[in-house]
Image (tube, rainbow, N blue to C red; front, side, top):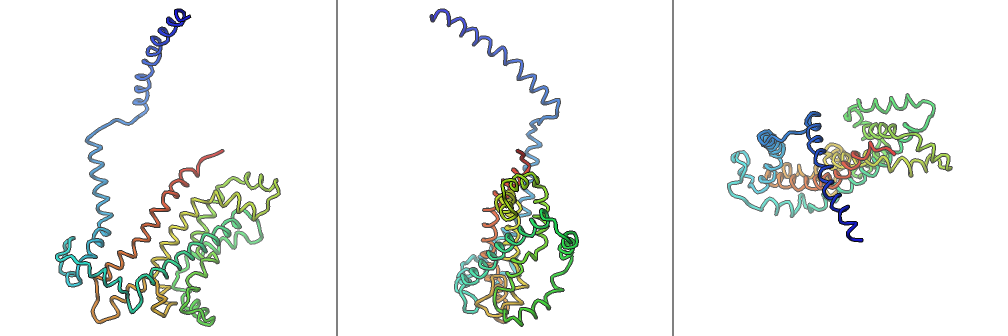
Length: 315
């Protein structure tokens, strides 16, 4: 039995390389004819150096800010080098003690609360408004959509005084309501427009299939549209968090108590509380305030890339 199998095995082993050998050069030649990549070490090194230089240029302000946190205030304006002459941790000790009698963690908590509510309100209201504009047919749809887009051309400074008068009459000054109420009412037309365009690219066949199964608009929105809206939601969450965290004008207008200040407003106290400006403490507090934004972006950007990569998949 083994004698009859041995020649067959040897024959297969002998024929296998012959059947595969001509294929590899043919594929390689065809790939080069189609413009396949050609390894050029000099070009690779040149591109690496160029990209490294651009990275250093883009990151230099952040690097300068990090090293400047160890500079005393006396070195600002005199020391133009990147490294401090007399490095010290006094700036961090000052910001840990707090500003205007309020500990630094309180300002962080205020900013985190406002930014979190802004993200929740933006995602909830903008997604609902986008579904209504993209999927529901109602009278005046084009007029309302055009009016919503028109608000993008309206400067924020035009509505500051009317809004302030309204919130003042309602007794909501020095609260966070004026800062987050508009987020729950879909007043950010940019995010609504972003999600509308995304929802319009989702096939309506999915809606029809869900409607055949007896689903209404709430069910279709929650079970069909919202999961597919993930890339747009993550993009809106990133921008909404960054804008709310770095917002300075609105908290400056509506907040009057130092204990309610957000972090951007609290930073100016280092320069306005005394006759001299403490640039060292200001830079240190600015660097610390930048860390949550970087962490938030680094955490969510991988979900953004995954969503954008799978958006074009069909089936």
